[in-house]
Length: 464
Image (cartoon, rainbow, N blue to C red; front, side, top):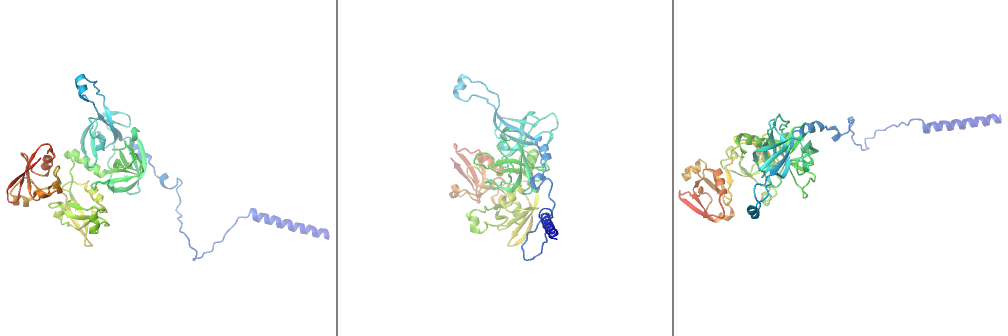
């Protein structure tokens, strides 16, 4: 009996040990969650994640890159030695070196199968010869068709044997902040280089109020100028133009001329030979000036109209001083580069809807853009305007331009409000004539300027 009891006790202990080991090492744990509304929680998204991962891995750059690299070219700005460099070489002879020397290099984008190429004005400025190398290493001489230094856009052309791959202009107004873009060009003479980034901002200016750039963080370096900025569909949305850097190399952001502006400049050069600029006719105020702070307009959202130019589209439509421009057509206007960027795509005669805020009331005006009616003349810095019917009747003249602004240097000469008739023996018909004639005035020679006052009397001043 005692032996049986000992055997039973051992069996019980062995079973207990076996059951404990099973519970500890093999049985799956299960948990019961109790719901308590007092416990804080964070919402969780149960959207299935991509097998490729999130973000950049889901974006395919290859198609856009393959399309773009063949339409982006290497542009070389060449100079040729055409004569002696000093008087000793002139008298004793010099070795003729007609081999072109590279003054600078950049990029360009083929925009038509017959060889038209858009690039930057600063890439080709001062060239005596232009040379273009395609992605297939074929090299051609290029001819200059036209330039616009204001937007830093130039148009050149090559004559190739076959149709060339090209990029069509996209709509830069549709570019979104945060959208992926590629910059394609030839930095440091490294041909067919592709870098990626996002649109960091739109309507950026670099110190000039009439500028409007697309800002990106795609790497752009010297040599990229004139190259393509494209979206992931391969649409050309900008021409890479500038970087701001203390070292001269990329430091995190770059700037491109929006494609809508570049396209309009190119179309004007081809059709008119120069850029046609539609003028709204307002004077705005920089929001960071003491004047803006004093008037309490330094924090407004929009463009404050400080003054309206007489005989302009804005003047005719009824836009007034004190209005705040909020929208041009479907484009929201938050700051002045928004306005100038959109106007840069328009020509004289174009019609646009201008939405303004006047005394907390939203108003819409239909404005017909006009050619520039005013200009600041070189040398004397006089602001002049074309004559209207009222001026012609009042001064009894059909020619000349009216002085509407006088620089501080000439404030005491009684020039304001008079009509400029001629410079020397050459008559002035409009502001274009005035700009050309005043541009010819030399500080080394005296020049006679004829004016007309309200009494109908001619006056002459001599610049020496």
